[in-house]
Length: 211
Length: 211
DNA sequence: CCGCTTTCGATACGAGCCGTAGCGTAACTG
DNA sequence: CAGTTACGCTACGGCTCGTATCGAAAGCGG
Image 1 (cartoon, rainbow over the protein chains, first blue to last red):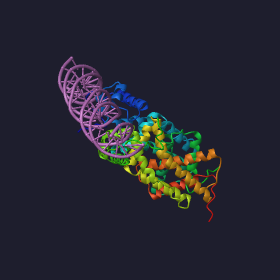
Image 2 (image 1 turned 90 degrees about the vertical axis):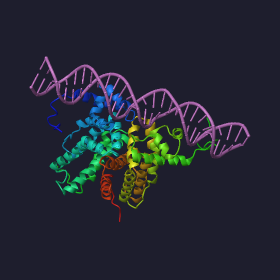
Image 3 (image 1 turned 135 degrees about the horizontal axis):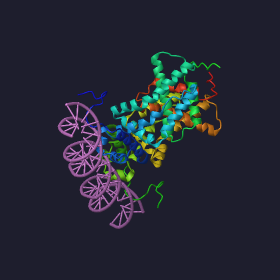
Image 4 (image 1 turned 30 degrees about the vertical axis):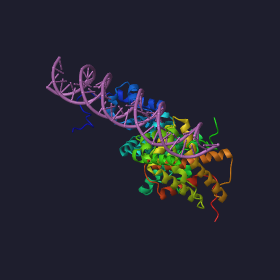
């Protein structure tokens, strides 16, 4: 019953941060070689050079472990801020596609999303560590475009939130479907045409950027 | 070494079609109650009232079984042909969302797609029995719109194929992401706004319907 | 330097599921 | 009726799971 969050527990042997990194790295390697269904925690522990008990002390199960292992892949996501909304969209699409193209992201992400349909806590964990980080890019890109005058400044907050949700589902969903279901590569040409659809279809009032 | 396809093998005890139906139905029920990872073939066999060996005689494993069980859910998909491209898109989106809203589709479909990243034969099976059936709706809807004059008749076949692929990934991906990742319902309002984006963003030459 | 606390590695364990084999029976054909 | 195939049932070795237990190691406060 003591505060464990900030002081991080002053007594006892500290947990090895190196073990954490080794376990997550080993999890990604196992995802690449074996895929989700054949991945076993015992195998991950062996690859990481730790005991199986250490693994169970830190993660409740396969689901949570893979979420954390995959979430690290999305650390590199950031808004390119390339000067125009079209280039920003294209850049984000290509970044997201580059991450999803890695086999550990493919098999791991879809599997945990599938499991999350029966596990609310898992869904919350995915949202917090993966999805929200992607969504932030949409919000930032929108704000930048508004500052440039490419998008109307701000409407009713409820309407704005629904619009952001919609284009987020469209962008992320399109890349996801292209990569995982259609199993075809996201080229620059594809990203450009997707951005074109969004730019023409987004705002009812589209003031062309003043030239 | 005999032809098994057309004559369907004239000798011996025939396979029970009722068993097939019972197994697939039991698979869907198990998906709802247990989810992908906790679904066992022994449990499915018990639910279906058949022996476990019967199950293994017809399907190579969990992956193939679930693909077939989920594929049946997409039988009801058909183009509404409601008279306008906007209504057609909205209708297809709502149909697709209604199927994906069922828990057996949620957990089953995503799980097999995740597994397909390591199994080319499984990916081909998914494509043939699920994805292509969805894609056909896009092709038909496009043809109807062209007949109505809502879309330009036909361009370079390569360009047309790429355009169909793109909007298919956008539509199916958006619904998939909305339902499974964002975990929020696809309302009529949402479907309408998605259709709006596509209609405004699709063709460079958009002749408004005469009338 | 010495207790206290917590983590770590190693091993062992019962439980459950996997996928297959064997066998006798049922269904259908010529 | 003989031939062929599917079916139900049972049993099996092998694997993974998640947990328990134990001694050793790594920090902290005195």
